[in-house]
Image (cartoon, rainbow, N blue to C red):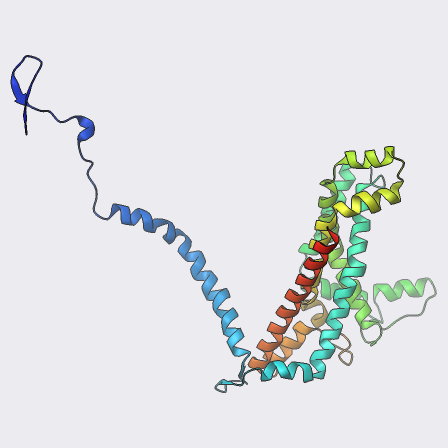
Length: 319
């Protein structure tokens, strides 16, 4: 320490400024502060890896193996996927699921848009009524699919069902909705429309609310009627919402399980056999785990492929 003159001219030791005092560091404090954020997110990643990532990759590896019941799995390569294109029941289930998906896209989605336009337009002038309709349309979507299937099993009942009672009251013949190969798929489609019409209408309502009202007024000033305004103003601005609804309807269609399983159990004569119930049958009735995993991954690949096609079409028509 070098000597230094103080204010009185005396030689003294140089005093250390308060801000020059080195702060005391606790051993390991910096390390603990760096590790703490990871400790908070560790439970999420542990659950995510245990219940999602591991089953996903485990099922992928299982799809390349022959695993029946409790037998030791053996690697067979792509034999399970080759078996898919040779399985008549799988191809029949794929056709039925595709028919339902097409009905969801080309029947359900336009009806949902029509309902949204009706609520948005002068047909429902009161704001309180619009709120009431929004709540009412959302209720079927949050209702359990098991409850919906049980309810419609009573509606479609041939002997005492509500629908046949209505037909009888107006002089129409009674129909065997769930036991007819021609009407069983129609019944499944009607239940799907009732279940998902409301929530899709709410999606379209949200899209309509994002369209500036000034654009409609400008089109009316230019002489456009309601039809031209809808085709040239409303519909182009609704393309993102339409894309979302169509992709969601496609994915949900290829995952549909409860309604066909509980209403018809795939019958009659596999007329309503869907991919998800067929996967359940192969995996939990026949205990063919490897082939069931291949069916599940084929469903995922089909959904991804159709979604990519829809995105490409959207980009092409959005230029």
